[in-house]
Length: 158
Image (cartoon, rainbow, N blue to C red; front, side, top):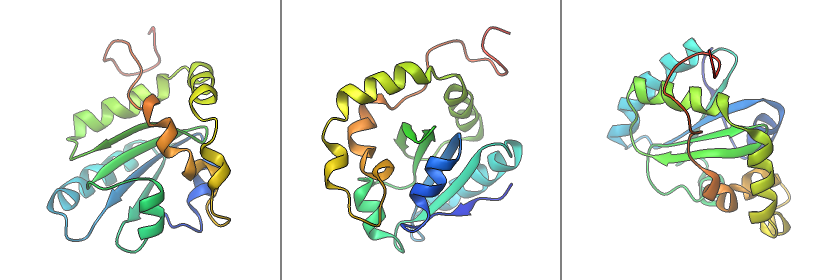
């Protein structure tokens, strides 16, 4: 599956309507972004059940500022509309695959419980055209990171 172009108009809808969404925040002038692009595209072809999106930070400055992205490339992952991973910098294919697998294994009940505790006021100041999923990014960053467990592929425990 090819990557989708995400904008302030479609970002919230795509994040909220899909189980897992990976987002590559990139800039045209960024060398590491150009290196990461084929790795990201290859991963999207390996995982057609996951939505892979790209945000052109130069074309979407308001969305980029809302997400507090200031280093490029930055990879974010959303699961069930909640940000669960955010990391700037280039990832090699094996590292990206590990991130994908860990996101699949997350205990979303625990993530939601932690988000409720840390996200008390983040949704009150959302601009009308950008949904709460985007505004929740700063508060949810404390949840970022892969799930614990062995580095194996497939379903946990198999």
